Each structure stands twice: as C-alpha cells, then as structure tokens.
Image (cartoon, rainbow, N blue to C red; front, side):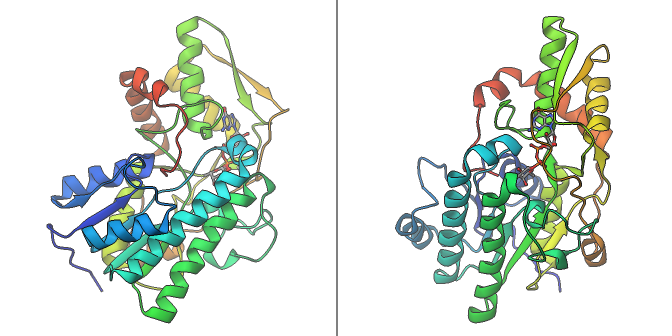
Length: 325
Ligand code: GFB
C-alpha cells in the first residue's frame, strides 16, 4: 500500500545536521515538501523525555524520520561505549514514546548493520538478528540499536503505531564526519590521502590488516530509500538497506588512493582493530518491496572527494559528530 504524504505534511527530521539527516532534508526539499520541522541539539536535547514531549505537543509532527544518534567509527565506538549506549537508548525511547503519545502517523527508525552477530551467516538476512554474540568493538551501539527495533515493534504490536525500522549498511557522502579519531573508514581515507598529497608525503596509514570487507552505500541512496519506505513499507520486521556488494578495506583504500592521490603508498597499521571480518547485508527483502540502490561506489567516492575538497575548511572544522546519524 502506498502512503500518500501531502507536500505540506509536518515532517520532523530528528538529527537533520548529520550525514543521514542532512541528506534526507535535501531529498525532501527536492521532492517539494514544504513543512520540515528541524531542531538543533542546543534547542532540544532528544535524550530528555520531558523536553521531547513538550516539543511534540507544541509542534505535532505527522511523520518522523528518527535518524538522530551518537555515531562513529570502530575506534570511537570502542572508546566511548557509555555514550553510545546511553545516548542512543535515550533518543529512541523519548522520540518513539512521544510519537505514540502525540499520534504521529508514521515513524521511520534507522538502525545499523552492526546489529547482527559477529559470526552471522553472510550475507546477513534480517532473521540473523539475536542469533549470536555481537562484535565487541560496537556492542554498546548495537545493543542500543537492537532495542530501538524492538521498541518500534512493541509500539506497533501493543498500540497499533505505524513505526518501521530500516538497517542501513556503512554509509558515506557529503556532510560526513572527517575527524580521524571518530570517523568511519571512508571519510578517514579521503582525508588522509588528500592531506598526504597536500603535504607531499608518500605513506598513507590504513588501520587494521585491510583484509576485512565492508559494504558501502552513498547516503543519497539511503535518503531516497528512507522516503520510499515511508511511503511503501508498513510492517513489523526491520528491513536491511544496502547494495548487496562488498569490498575489502585494501581494495577500497586503493580506490580512494586512485581518486585522491594516485602516487600515495598504502601502509597498514595492524595495531588498530579490524572489527568484523565481513558485514554484508542480504537485500532481498528490500528488492522485493521494490527499491534498489543506484550510486556506484567508484562514482560515489569521486563525488564525495570533490565535495570534501570544495568544503575542506568546513569539513575539518566540524570535527567529531555527536547526536546526528
Ligand atoms: O568504518 P569503520 O570505522 O567501521 O572501520 P566498522 C571499517 C574498517 O576499516 C575497520 C578499517 O577494519 C577499520 O580498521 N580502517 C582502515 C579504518 N583505516 C581506517 C581509518 O582511518 N579509520 C577508520 N575508522 N577505520 C562501525 C561500527 O564498524 O561501523 C559502528 O563501529 C557502525 O557501530 C558503523 O555500525 C557503520 O564497519 O568496523
């Protein structure tokens, strides 16, 4: 069933300053939506239930994209587990509960592919959830994200709320976090190769062994998918959002090198963690509901590199991103 969302519907994008939220805003604006409700962290702490309830009562959103959260790469996740579990648990709890209390028509909750067990069968179907132990480097984040899925399912089951959950794979794109200690691998590599080129340095350090694989999706594909799911998906099970293709860290580092600095020389630092050996989503369910990604990795990387070069000062100054997926 297709949900016809009026162009003047009140749409709350929670986390609109982050990689995902800013892409969703661009997508909604392009589509002609005129009544986006955006609020910064300083204006509203999403971990504060009373403040969130007050805001919902005053603004009465009809649709909610819940894409706010404390996010980061492998090192940040394992260094700050308390922030990852507390912030994410609280944000989901307050926004989902307020959406129920103030009769939101539909809510899309965004999780992560790290919810699946470390030893999950690859590619990972949605049914792998809670079938084994989690990857230790992101266990706190994963536990919070799993609770968000169960929260949406419980409100659907007990209260009949139209709350859905989507689990995206590793993302990249304009507006990413380029801070080298807290970012994900792709923005880190884009920055490292670019700065090595600027400084005339040959070696570029890549963490881990380079032998593990990851699946990468451009964030503009994800935001297209989020709007598609908001319109076309209404069910209890969460749904994977990925490309169905993965690549080793060595291969992706070589791709970034070719795009940003072909003379760069890759050096692996195996004292840094590898994380999961493989993390590839099974996207059959997504294909069955009628959505497929469009942006090829090489093209997406070229565009992201161009964006980074054009917004270098802003991207570096932004630093560590918190509370925005
Ligand atoms: O992107 P990343 O931090 O996240 O790391 P995860 C992916 C792989 O790239 C790891 C390697 O094997 C890293 O060791 N890598 C190589 C680097 N060079 C770098 C670098 O300079 N920076 C970073 N960050 N990695 C995160 C989870 O896991 O993925 C989160 O911790 C979340 O919870 C996110 O799920 C999507 O894929 O390992």
